[in-house]
Length: 337
Image 1: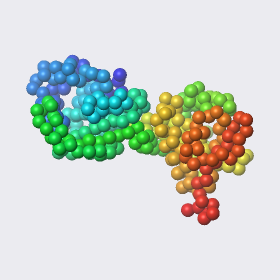
Image 2: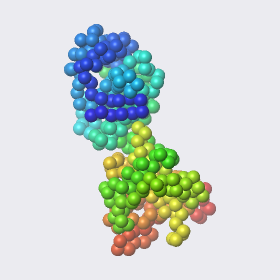
Image 3: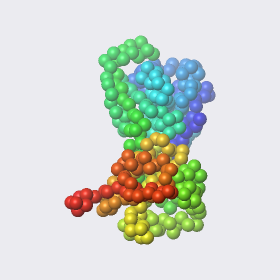
Image 4: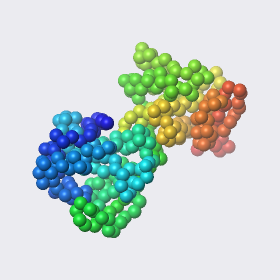
């Protein structure tokens, strides 16, 4: 498998990478602080590639600009991550590329892959005392400190050290979803979402998929984003790796005299907590903008009903086909906040 970020390609290691691997792994500032010895030759690096790096879920960090590997990153199963739905994140980077944000960039994509593709529940990460660069990377990624071990074994170095362990859960990851105002060029994602039958299956009572041809983008953008008149609010949901995963919106419905909510998560990103996070963000934005009540009418068999109820929506009424849900955002007895 190959993964991609703005500046990097993450791909499996190959034996032909030995010379580039040795170029960086021979530096005593790279391996020993991470718990492995410096490489002594290109042949030594080739052997490490064969024995250690050419395994599932370990990737060479390749700079797009040069097409050459400059470090390594991967997900491993070990004593920290013994369960099938867990892994430990490990990484190293050549010294000339330190301080450029490349490890966080690579790690966010690996974590996206871990939680969204592999459906992992927890990713562990550790660093040895004194490795402040690794500590800062983990903090930047949202890992939370768990414990310190005074005599953690370092088998490849034949010693023990003080080791610090941190953890990132799927819930932590979904909590880092942020709202994003799309540009006109970003509307390809909305078009793809509206056209996807699985994503739009919740909309079967109203016809399923919705055409959103490119010739309508400009008028839609003008109405929803540019001249919203404080009657409409629209955002994409973007994960920490920068991928669009859904949309949230509300608008004033003149015919019914209500403010109607909209939360859609692309089918490929469901089951990860993104819908709940999106609903929290939507309610927060509506409340901040002075909306007193949010409503949503759903097909009676829509599984998202449970999600809305969990986040404080109550039943207003129902028919044989739909259920209308409502959430009070402002305390009307006190005139709001």
